[in-house]
Length: 133
Image 1 (cartoon, helix red, strand yellow):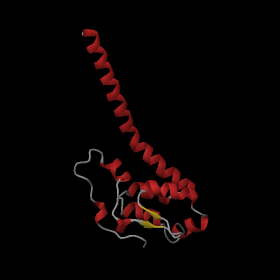
Image 2: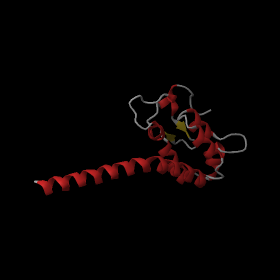
Image 3: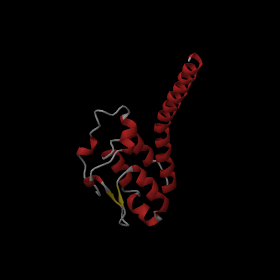
Image 4: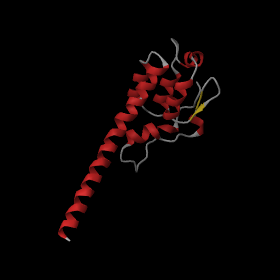
């Protein structure tokens, strides 16, 4: 195994959206993922980026019939069981990228929509104040 299991499963008590934080959280160095080619991954976003340029031999070292190191890392370090299962079903590195990116967008979209709604609401209030002044 290329990382240690354990303490990374804690969630921030002050977090409003732990599922989003979970995907983008900083992990401790003992939970970094050491790729066969020497690259060190510190986040799921770095995994997405690494998959873009990873050669097939390196990918197959980590993902084959006997194991899926990325599945284990996502499940054990990020505590993302459902996402890990979807990653497990990916047939190649590009499909794995798509699975990860779709999940990131799915979780970030509500935040974007909420921010957009707040901005719209603030804009309406400003217009109403200027009309009454």
